[in-house]
Length: 89
Image (cartoon, rainbow, N blue to C red; front, side, top):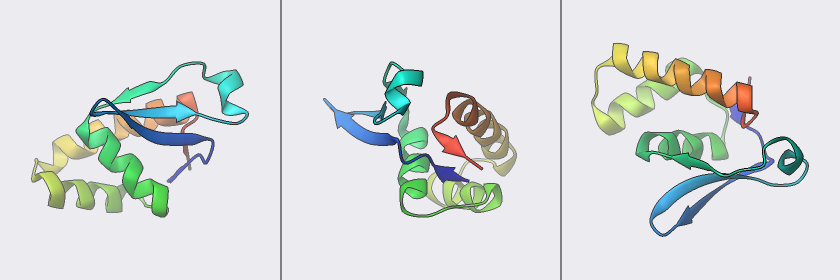
């Protein structure tokens, strides 16, 4: 899993947004408001590719939530990210 380089993480008034840049502006014409965990995932993927298992472990270490819940929520985030285009497999 990796972040599409045509999206940039930006903090505005203390909130994290994923903003399309370059040719992605044509397809995604709005900013995406991220929660704390979503921003954490984007920050991880900004620097390197990660597997779903690696992301699950990073989130577990950072937030200490139940792994089953992390995996379920992560899968939904990834599916939406691929659909919108900010994540690539």
